[in-house]
Amino acid sequence: MNRNLLSLGVLISLTFLPTPATTAAEWPQWRGPKRDGICTETGLLEAWKGSGPPILWSGAGLGKGYSSVAIAGGKIFTMGDRGKGAELIALDLEKGKELWAVKVGGGEPNSTPTVDKDLVFALGRDGDLLCAEAASGKEVWRKSLQKDLGGKMMSGWGYSESPLVDGDRLICTPGGDDSILAALDKKTGEVIWKAKIPDSVGDRGKDGAGYSSVVISEARGVKQYIQLVGRGLVSVAAADGKFLWAYNKIANDTANIPTPIVKGNFVFCSSGYGTGAALLEVTQKGKALEPREIYFLPAKEMQNHHGGMVLVGDHIYCGSGQNEGFPVAIELRTGKFAWKPGRGPGKGSAAVLYADGDLYFRYQDGTMALIEANPKEYKVKGTFQIATKNGESWPHPVISNGRLYLRDQDALHCYRLK
Image (cartoon, rainbow, N blue to C red; front, top):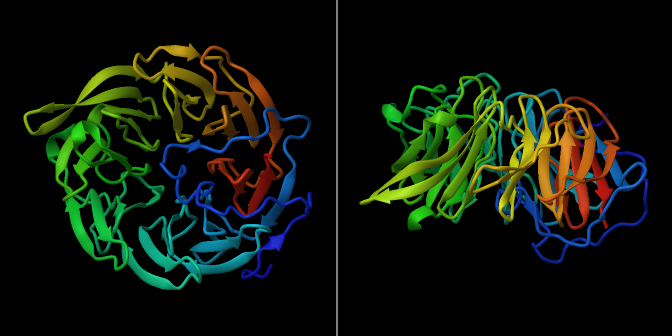
C-alpha cells in the first residue's frame, strides 16, 4: 500500500455532514477541549438499533499504535508506525484522505496529537517531541524529553502523554529528577522552566513519568498543573513550575495511567494494578497548598485501569477493574455508588466519553455501548461491534460535529450520529 495515500474503505453512506464553521465542534486534543472527556454537542442519536450508527467512511493505512485522534481546522490528526517509527499523520476531515505525514521517532505511538491553531504537537514513545505546521506538516522544532530534558519513564511502555498547550507554553512530562514537568515556548521549544518534586513525596510507585496527561486546576485561586506520574499525583505552579503538593497513595509500581478530574478545589484520581481511587480537596495553610483526602476507595471497590473517567453533574462515570470495564457511577463528594451493575455489555477495559446525556463505552473486545448517564438507573441504549478488530480496542472514542471516530490500529472508522 502506498504509505503517502490513505486508502479509502467501502463508503457506506453518501450523506456527509458539513465541515464545522466554528471551533465549537472541534476536538483538538486528548479527551477534548477541556481534557475531561466531555462533548457538548446535542441532537445525537438517542439509541442504537441493529448494527449501530451508519458508517460514513472507513480508511486504512495509518500503521500501528494506540493513538486516538484530534480534530481541528478541517483536519484529523493521529499517529502511527508504518514500519519506520512513529509518524504524525494529517487526514482530510470529509473522506479520511491522507494530506501529509512527518516522522516523529520511536516505535508504535500511544499519544494523541495536540492542535493549537496553526501548530500541532506530537510525542513518540521514546520521548521525541515534535512541533509541526498544521497546514503542511513542516517541522517547526523538536526536542527529546530524554536527551534534552533528562527525562525517564516509570516503566517500559514508553511516553504516552498528550502535551498540553496553555497560552504561549507547551507543558509536558519528561519525568526526570530535575524535570518531572517542563514548560516550553510553544513556538520555539525553548525551556521556560523545569519542575522538580522532593524525595519525600512517598515510597509508593517509581520515579519517572507515568502514562497520564496534564490538566489545569485553579484550586484555591492558584493556577497549577496537576499530573499523575510514577510517584502519584503531583501539582506544580503554572507560573514557574514550583512544587505545590503531592499525593503518593494513588501510585503503583507498574503504570499510573488515568487522567485526573478537577472541579473547583477538588481532584478525583484513580489508578489500576490493585491501587484504587480517591477524592482530594486542595486546602491552604498560610501560603502552602496541601491535599486533604476526602475518601479513598480500595481497588476491590473501584480502580480505573486506562479507560479514563468523566464527571457529569455530581457523578463520576467510568469502567472499573483491572483489565475490566465494569460500568460504575460514583457520587463525587461522597464516594457512594449510584450504580454498580457488574460485567456490562463488553469485555476488557473500557474507554469512556460523554455526549448528549449518554456515555460511550468502548470495550477492549471491540464492543461499543451507549449507556444513559443517569445515576438513578443503569440503562444500556444500544451496542454494536466496531467494523474491524486489528488489536486491543483501546484508543479513546472521539465525537466531533455529529460524528463518532474510532481508531483501530491501521484503520479509522467514522460513524454518523445525527
